[in-house]
Length: 75
Image (cartoon, rainbow, N blue to C red):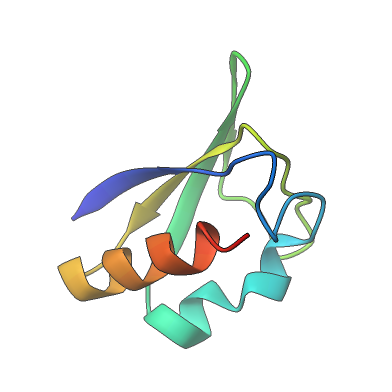
């Protein structure tokens, strides 16, 4: 399943590296793209710096996607 998860300006992850989220390790999901303004960043690396307003395209199981959303929505 694929889902969009928006990163808010008040997110704990705003300004941090994607790898710091430990998303694949913690949830088993993959972040296949990041939408920022009118631009898409396909296959972001662990060194990709997240920013408030980013929309992350997350792919995985329902449970994994829900867990990823909970991690990304942390403030």
